[in-house]
Image (cartoon, rainbow, N blue to C red; front, side, top):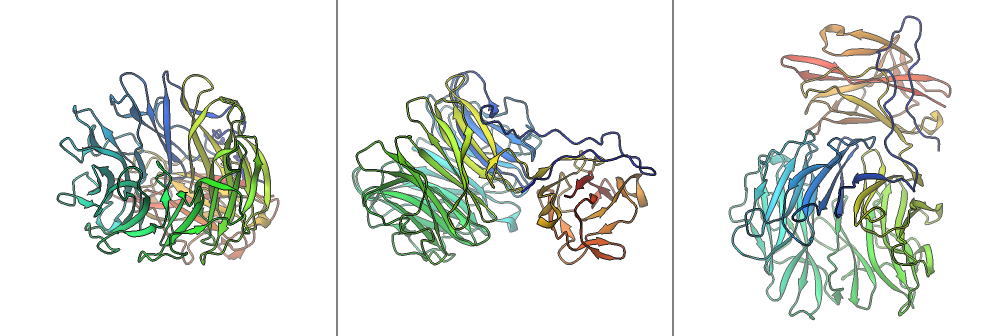
Length: 610
């Protein structure tokens, strides 16, 4: 599928374009030997995490071993992959730990980054939460909010924003001694639940596995060590509402309780369509992968204790990762497949329907056939029916490379394996995410230059590198609004008119502003039309997207988007179809208070349809 691309608007008689008309340069690279560097500072950088931001970009966090200990750092990438902060990123916490442990990264509805981590800056080990705006400010103070006190053992926190109805309430969960504890924070960082919420077992100990948002609530998943160190490890989950009340009964719901998780396996969780999704592997039964869905009431959709992803005998299955297909709700899971008692590894995948049917057969599909490749650490990214599997291969120590392959909904390999990071080196701690623009991103710690840098690579989920489906800013820039910057306009999809696949994305809008998009076949420069503070960059006959569902709100994040129907493009005299060979210009209009009630325009965008 041809991709949309930045274009330079044409100068035409009677239409004078702004001086800043050239398209912004693309940042996302497509060379697997030259991956994008997020941090290459001296010493080690490790444990990157990714979350997509509402404006089409990503937050990237990592642990930095510079100086006296492992610090917490943060970077913001915009929709084109450009860094919003200095190359070193923002220093969130200057810590003194000599080793690393898991931490949490989330995103608020307004686009702020949320972090939770172990903190020793006060002389004892506590749990701290921090909030960082897109401008690099710290609304919860430069040191964040400390959630614990005393000498209890605390570990591995996670953080999400939950209740929108309460003004952006965030929830933090962590392991504390033998329990899991949670606390909610207001948008300004004040504690909500006096004393917090404590979840503890009748016997044994709890350890936090994951925390995710479900509607206005959160779901917390927990590894239950049922007794001593060699006792079975089970997986349980509980739903907590904005008041701190448990919704799934007096005890958490059992996800996996008939065998045992592998030691050190704290399975991640995700949310789709009101369900909580789980994928894990067991030590008993021996090294097999299972999946489960809990509906909103905590009831399992699949068989008790999970559905095996494959039933073919003679193979072991470990290290699963799963994601839901947003178009069907199917669960797509990938894992490392291996021959017992050997060094023969591969990567397999399975698609599981909402009813628990294994859609890709009893063995799944082989993405990488079992062999001496050292294939491991697979991951999956899904969007609009497209599935991209990524993994590492290390046939010898220190020769790691990263690869990807694309699958269609039937499990057929439609994008054969290709290089993601082709420079051989130790690669670890792989993170993955998908942007609102359906650009995939993969991040990892890489030792090609020293003992660890943070690198990323953008992925086209159709199979390939870079982000060819993204149009960058082109045409007139936006006049600064009440946020202090001009609103930007981008688009993603295909410039082929017959594909009918273009989505407009306006960013850097004032929060909670309403507006709409409009289009024409001519460009112009008309400052302050009708008293607006912005510049109208479209000329000739202008059509407005003001039909049902087309009047948009920017929400707390200052973003709105619209998927266009190119067969129903508005004009003053009715709806028309966009044709191949046609050039169209797009812009957005929105309300603002700057300081009085006014309006403004986004930057404009030109598309040459094929």
